[in-house]
Image (cartoon, rainbow, N blue to C red; front, side, top):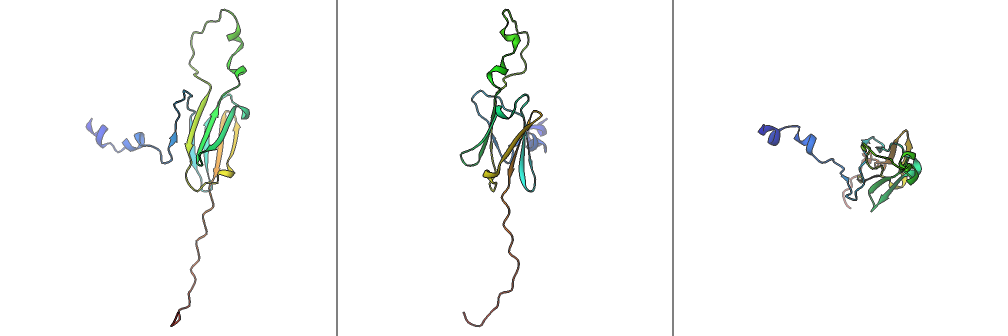
Length: 148
């Protein structure tokens, strides 16, 4: 049992912080589930936004390198017709708040001006392109003289 707490090789996998930490807010908004994939050309973030369209989601870059994603359905969608009827009694409410907020610290060497976002089938996809790596100089011979 002591190995589980002190020496488990999987402890770092389950309890370590991610390399690019996600910043969570304590404003009461829920956090949306997110996948972050790095390709050779970009970083791709996929966020679950069920029932939300492009007008319901706001994506922006704040403080230079913090990508913020916020979403909330319009007030009309939050209340169903059943809620407006007199004598309505809720028995179970498990779906939680429809609003969410997420902040992600972007790594260095990304092109913030080239970020693209799209919503399709309840998934928000944000593509953050990387800066092109500078070309490595090719080896070239340098003439050596006897005096400078």
